[in-house]
Length: 76
Image 1 (cartoon, rainbow, N blue to C red):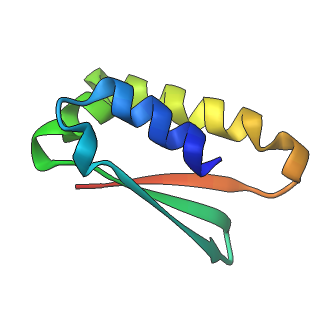
Image 2 (cartoon, rainbow, N blue to C red; image 1 turned 135 degrees about the vertical axis):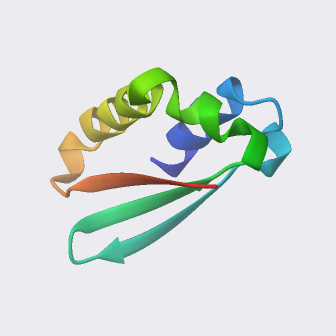
């Protein structure tokens, strides 16, 4: 799952070397914290959050087999 988030995020940003994903277990489920360069935050979120929502949908769909809730947080 972590690799999927990295591939999607690196394709969208101007500074792919600054993209990182941290995974942690939470009471809500598995939380992936996506960190990008400050200039690329808008590209990850998109207009009205459409790109972020699409990314979360893809990751949630890929996590169906694991039967755990997956959350993607975007951190600047």
